[in-house]
Structure formats: structure tokens, C-alpha cells
Image (cartoon, rainbow, N blue to C red; front, side, top):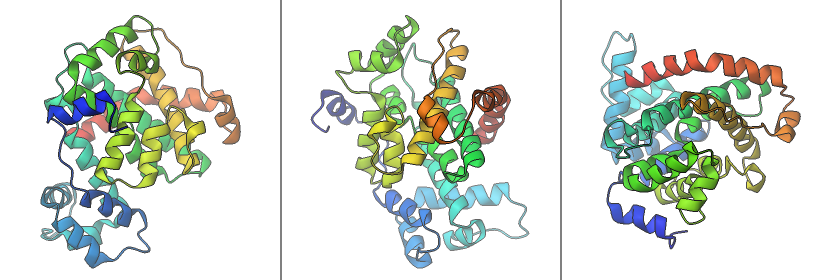
Length: 284
């Protein structure tokens, strides 16, 4: 994958945020809160001062504590590993948010961000109903699942605009990507980024295979749920674009998790208001 011309162009652009591999180690520890060593976790955070400062700042601004949190150890003890992980992923997602860094002319990155939020919300609701995945974990993975799209917007805006043009003409987005990007998709780019940053395997699997869940070898439930959530949110996104395209949901996945069309319709009805709520929270 490193040899593909698009990957080489992304690398050569110099616009991708530099995320230390320590971040991946932090997430791996926080994913297994019963096993992680607090002192080792604190040491890892200390090598990533931006994240450390962000975690403390978020906690001090958003909590009703009677005292100020001053150290990362205090923050993690107060938050717990799960919430610390959510904020950590949200922080990296913020680094990639297109609001300030997106450079495409035609592709509307803010509208696409709503698709990411919709996917997160749909995945959370599905996980809550089925109990096949941790709902808070899958919510955060939804934020980062299309990291390849954001990378294209930041690094190769002309290419993402060409993809968008084909998409608006009725070509399926994945097909348009393969045509413009020489056979790869945003999921392939996202998988490469996950490997480059040393993110946990389960995040890499969700990012890399949410459009091709049958290829996933590990964390299959997480990938399947994200695939279904992405399909639900894609229909929502198409309406935001003014398109009338409707994507068919994977019958085998719906059957496996005992999900019917009525349940999916209930998610669709919730998305506009829930996306607005989550978007407001993210901008705070």
C-alpha cells in the first residue's frame, strides 16, 4: 500500500497531522482498563503533551468539580479509562476536522462531517440494542471511521473534488473513488493511516473494512455494526446533498443481529436531531 501513488502523494503533501505512535499505545492501554498500568499510561500521556493538556482542559471546563484538575493522573482517575479513551479519540479527530484544514472547493467537508456523526450515532444505537459491541467504543470509532476522506480533503483536495463530481452525477462514491484514485478507496487510505499511527487493530479493522465487512478477519461484530451504521447514515448524507439515491442494507447482517427495517427506520428518524446535538457538543 505504501507504494501506491495516492499514498505517496499524501505523504509528499506534508499536510497530514503528525501523530506520535505513543497515541496508539495509549489507546491500547485504555481499551483494556482492567489490565492497564496507571503509571505507564501516565508516562505515555506525558510524551504527548497536546493530548495531556486537552484531556485536563476538557475535564476542568466540562465538570462541576470543586477543585481544579492539574495532572493527567488525576484526570484519568476521575474519568476512568473508558471516558479518557473517548476524549482521546475525539482529540485526534479534532486534529483532522475539516473546518480549518479542508482545502477542497466542491466537496463540502462540513456536510460530510455530519455523515460521520450520523454513523457514530447509528452505531451506538445498534450496539445498545444488540449488545454485540461496546456502545461507547463504537461511538468513538464512528468519528474516525472515514479518516481516509478527511486525509484526501486535507492533502489531495483536487482528487476529492473529482470524486465528488462523479458522485453528484450518480456514480456510487466507492466506485468514483476507485476510478479517480487508481483502484483504492478512502477505507484503504484510512487503514494505511491507522497502521502508520500505530492505532489498535480493532480501530484499523473498522476503518479498513466497514465497506467490505466480509473481508474482516478480526473484530467482525464491530465491523458489521459499523457497516450497517454507515449505510444508514449514508442515506441520511445523500439527502443532505439533495440526492435521491437509496442504499440497500445488508440482509445477512440485519438477520445476524436480529435487526428489522422498522428498527432501522427508527434510527433514520432520530438522526437529524441527534446529529445536531452531537455536532453542538463537538464544537464546545
